[in-house]
Length: 138
Image 1 (spheres, helix red, strand yellow):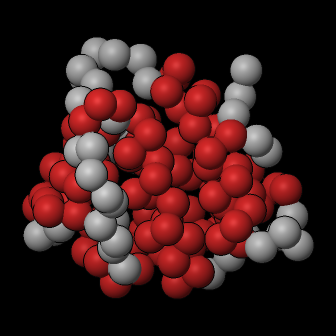
Image 2: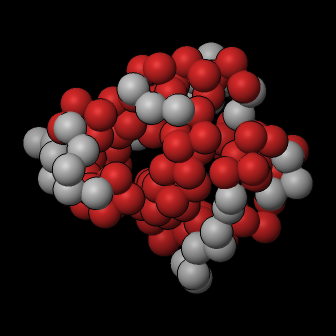
């Protein structure tokens, strides 16, 4: 997998991980950012979820033009329901704790990438082009 996310996942997972696991995790991140989590309208909803969990400062740093603030796996467990995390971890072939650790590294980069110039895309904007750049797809 090429692209920013592919490079990040290879770095986080290590070079020895199966391509299928990397692809599964990339798909999960795409679901989260694209709004296919059953929760609503993509990136705007994701930002709201973080703000509702008391992590507004972190998520706003990812949207903004400055440095991205870190989140912990424990922080993410406040944002995403355990049922979603369990399902995603099965999809990725890893444990829920490991998946949250991977997402803690990858989500700041991913959100930063799909909010160019510190602007959240309009709810009606297709995130496909931004996500393709993130995933390195044609």
